[in-house]
Length: 439
Image (cartoon, rainbow, N blue to C red; front, side, top):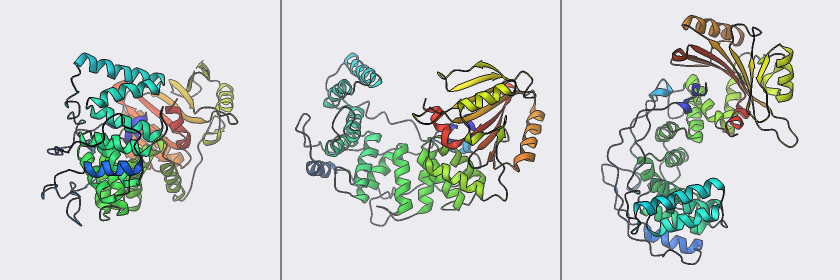
C-alpha cells in the first residue's frame, strides 16, 4: 500500500552521458598523523583542489556566472515516469587497495559490517582505518562520517573534512557530496559556496542523491551559483527519484506554488505525502495547509474513533466492541491484525498499526488498513465512489489504480492490486506514520 507515494516508486536509469574522471594530486597529510585542526584541514582542502577546469561544453560551476547545465525539466504526470540516476560509480572500488588480497579486503569489509551492526564503533573505526590506509575511497568517506557525527570518536570537523577530501580526491561520489556539504556549511573549513557547488555538481552527475538535493538547495537560494528555480527543480526531481525526503518535500512545495514548474496540486500532494511518510515536518505542515484550502473539511472517524487522535488501547477497545476478532494483538508488533468476520462488509482483514509508546504518551495510531478481495475494477470504482461521496473529489490519482484524499491530519488512499485481486483502503496519520516504519 505504501507505494501510493512517489517515494516508493522505482524508475528506469537516467542517461547522464559520460562521467568526469578526477585526477587529483595526493593529499599532503599522512595517515596516522595527530588530529587535524580546522585550520590544517583548510590547507589540506586547498591542496586537494587540483581538478582540471570543466569542459566548456559542460558549463558547470567553472566560468563566473555560468549556469549548471541540466536537462530541461518537464516533470512527468505520474511518479513512475521519473527517472533514476545510473548505479553508483565503481571507480572507487576499482582503485588500488595497497596490496590487500581479495580475501583480506573481504575480511576487513565483513569486520566493519559486523562491528557496525553490533554497535562496536571502535572496532568499526579500526577496520575502516586499515581500508583507508590502503586507498579504499568508501572507507575514507565512512571515516569522515564517524568524525562528523561523533560515532565512536569525539566529533572533529577538521578530521571529518580531511577524510571527505581524501575520499573525494579518490573519486568517491559520496565523499564528493560530503566534502561539498562541509564547504557549503563552513564546517571544519572556511565556507566556500562556489567550490561547494562544484563538488556537489560532480557528485550529483554521478547520481549521488544528497548532492543532487543540496545542489538544488543552492540554486533555490542563489548560494554559490546564480539563483535559478528551474535548475533547483531539476536537481530536486533527480534526488526525489531516489526517495530523498527533503527533495520530495521541496519539489512538492514547488508544484504547490508553481515555483520553477507549472503549478500542479495533485502532483504536489503525492510528492508531499512521500516526504511526510518519511517524516518530513515541512511536508506534514504543507499537507495540512493544502487541506485547509478546501471549502470544507471532513474528519475521518471509524469505529467511533477519530483516527488522528486515538491510541492503541482506545483503538483495541473500539475494534473489539465492533465485533472484530483479533488474530494478533501484541505490543511486540507494530500492527494488530483482525478478522472482520462480516462486521466490515466485504473486508478480508483489518490491520491497525501504531507508533512507539513514549514515557508519558501512549502508542498513537499510525495507520489503519482494510483489505478487500476484488475480482475486477468494478469493485474498485464503487469503493472510490463511496469515498468521494464522503470526502469529495480525490486530491490525487496514480495511474488509475490508486486514489488519495488529503484531509490534513489524515490522508486516505485506495489502491487496486490486480495481480493479487485485492484492493486496500488505508487511513494514514502522516505525523505518526513514519514512526511505524522505523520500528
